[in-house]
Length: 141
Image (cartoon, rainbow, N blue to C red; front, side, top):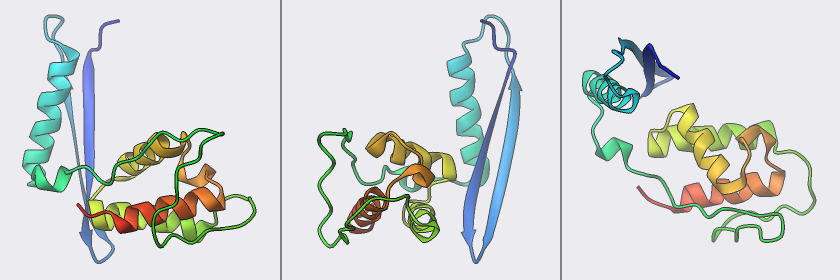
């Protein structure tokens, strides 16, 4: 499959309920690697926005969860008895912590959650959301 163009966008939280978005598209020649083009485009967008490598530092480590072996709760995490879907407040907290503490965009938060639970934040149970919030709050950048 030949990819003709790639678009890369980034949203940066400026605080105070403001954000900045930059999106760029690059046309690719048949001889050019799409991976190299994406890397160049990503680096260009980040440079234009003044995003440093420090801001892109990874967040807290996650371990792959399984049905039989759920991840241990972080120290200080609230244990929720019973199931049920994560509350809107829990989902908002996950995105808020990811944006504020780790400077992640929504896609990066979704990826972090998928790595931990194979689900998006809105699909977590109350207990999973509680564990994830605890883990995100207790780790430092």
